[in-house]
Length: 321
Ligand code: FO1
Image (cartoon, rainbow, N blue to C red; front, side):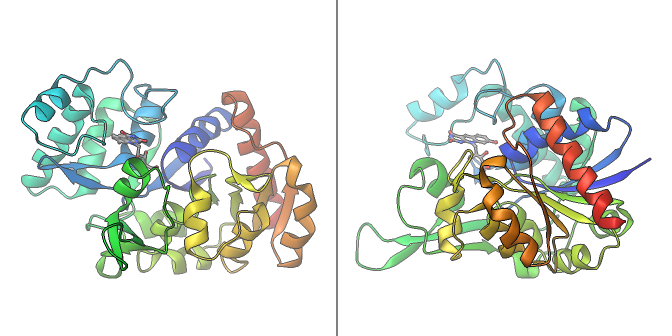
C-alpha cells in the first residue's frame, strides 16, 4: 500500500488529487491542507481550501468555480445583505453555510480543527485523509498600498483575492500566526512515513508555502526519506488559473516553471514536472540539482490529470532509484 502525502491548497490541489486517486486507487493518500485562506465571517469559521478538497473529492463541488457547493441557493446571503450585514463580496451559499455552522459549533465545543475536519469528511468520504496543516489559527494577510493614504495596509488574503481580484500590487504576503502554530496531529508522522511526497499545482506562496511555514513542516519534508516531487502551477510563464503571479511577485519569484522549482529549492524538491511548453526550462531546473521532466500539465479532465499524477509518481520512483 503506497503511502502518498500531498501538500494541497484549493482548486489546483483538489483537481490534482482527483487525478491522483484515479491513477493509484489503492494508494493511501494523506492530504495536508492549507488553512491560511481561512476567514471568520458572520461568526463562522470558513476553511476554503479544506472545503474545496472535501467537496471536490466528495462530489459536492461547484465544478466550474472549483469552490463552494453545486446546486447552491443564496437566501441567507440575501437576507444578510438586507440587514446591511457584510461583507457581500464573499459568496457563501446556503448549503455551504451548513458546513461552516457545523464546523464552528464543533470548534466551540472544544474539538480541534483536525477532529472537526475528520467529522465533516465522514459525510463526504473524500477517499483521502484530510489533515489541516495546523489546529492553530493561521490567516494569510497581504500588504498593499493604502488607497486612502500614501502608506500601506494589510488586508486579509480573501479580501485581496476576492474583493480586489488581486488587482493591486502585493508588497508582502504574511501567514499571520504561523510562527506560533504547531503541525496538526498526524502531519509530521505522515510526512515521515510517506513513500512519496507531492507538491501539486497549488499556489507555491499562499498554499504550499503557507503549509511549509508551519514550524517543523519544512524540516520534516526536507528530512523525509520519501522523494519529493512537485508539479509546476506555472505553464508558459503564466499561472494556469488564479493569480499566482501576483503573490509570486510579492516574494520576488518570477512566474516561470523553473523559478518556482528553484524557489522551493533542491533542499526540498527531488523532482519537478514542467509542461511541454516549458521544456526549455528543464536544463535550468536540473542544473539546480532537481530532476526535471516536461510532460503535459493541463488538468483538462480526470484522465489528463491521472496521467500527470502517474508521471509524478514515475519521476519519484526514478529519483528514489
Ligand atoms: N472565490 C471567489 O472568487 N469569489 C467568491 O465569492 C468566493 C467565495 C467562497 C466561499 C467559500 C469558499 O470556501 C471559497 C470561496 N471562494 C471564492 C474561493 C476562495 O477565495 C479560494 O478558493 C481560496 O481561498 C483560494 O484558493
